[in-house]
Amino acid sequence: MWEFVLMQLNKSHNSLINFDKDIAREIVVIEKRVNSLELKIDRDCENFFALYTPVAIDLRFVLAVLKINSNLERIGDIAEGVAKHILSTESNFSPELLKETRLLEMYEEAIAILELTLTSFEKEDTLLARNVFKKDDLLDEINYAANENILRYLKTHPEDIDHALYALSIIRKLERVGDQSKNIAEEIIFYLEAKVLKHSSKSKKGFKE
Amino acid sequence: MARTIIKSENFNAYFGKNHVVKNVNIEIPRNNVVAVMGPSGCGKTTYLRCINRMHELIEGASSSGKMLLNNEDVYDMHPIFTRLKIGMVFQRPNPFPNLSIFENVIAGYTLNGIKMPKSEKEKIVEDSLTKSALWKEVKDSLHKKGTFLSGGQQQRLCIARAIAMRPEVLLLDEPTSALDPISTSSIEELLHELKNNFTLIIVTHNMQQAARVSDKTAFFYMGELVEYEDTKLMFTNPKDSRTQNYITGRFG
Image (tube, rainbow over all chains, first blue to last red; front, side):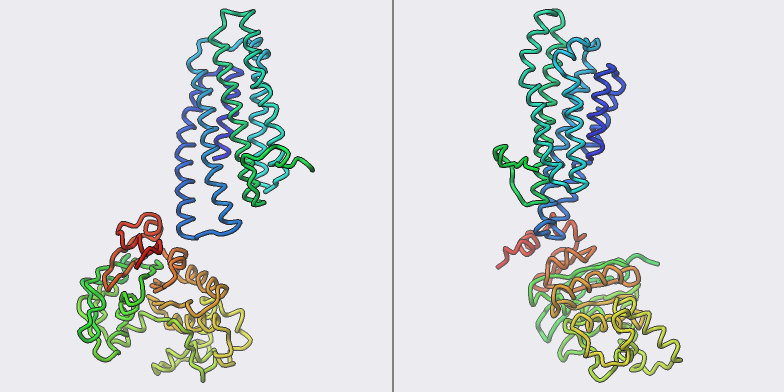
């Protein structure tokens, strides 16, 4: 599931850079696999609860998997959303727009964050999971500056309003990827350390290393 | 080989006038673990004891309907033959206290007057003890008394004794209710191994155990078979509201 969603995100990045509609269509196809995997994992978790009544770390593991599962599925939806944007635009995004909005930089960061959550889950490393919180800050920053950046771009290129709006929408989506990854990281920490970090302030999330 | 090994058709059992198993229809597939659960007095143990004709040993007990083993009615067979084909393990470990571990395993043959060379006996003992996951622990003390073993080991010895006769079906009547959690989990693991060679029917009070070990589960209530389903389905989406109430603990 994780690999598939990562693949979707990577492919949507590629299709954006190369304005490749074939790749965009592939993403839409992969989305179907991701959706059915989500259902399968949900069902497996349900059976696991019913048959094995897990406790302690086993219980936290299934709970975390259940939530990570739905977070991943949403990231998949986001990649699909980007793909649909690409399918519906006529021409490529101008390099200037991409540069001005820092869209590609943001994309790379979003992919890196998701990869980081996967490694931290595989290695059961909560230190890595905590790095996710830190990395998400960059996404937030780019997202925060996006309005201004797009406005500035539009003043010089008023004719390119379609692309600018798409770019803004993609930025908003990528910001969500960061949030979902953060949720995933919280679940990983919950599973391994039994600490609930949801809705807690940054200082409590503990960056001391 | 047919997939169904045990089949009951309109099966009823009575203690005197007391109707304790009511019109049970069930098909048990080969090499499966089937759990039978239900509250006390629901007829599950009686049903189990009917399968290898132990029920009729009780005074005043009777039964009607068909109980088929490989399509042959066990009530048309000689009861000894039935019990050769359908072994049984009880709630409390009951090794013969005056026999050694070795003699316990081979007891089914000795008591039936079956004679065989020593080498074959040794082979059967080793094979049965290996299958019941006890060989490593007892191989150096085969000639000590079986009662020296711990409860869990004694229970595995009883399983070895039952499978030494190479039955097709093994009935287990709450085989772990007298054991601690560690012995219980070793028996449960054993059940997983055993189902490659035998069909297992296990009566249990412990719902979680039924969920963990079985492929199919039968739920008995007041002598009726309420539901018989794949264990996964039974524990995620039972069809009958009585099953739902029982497994969620809302009964009463």
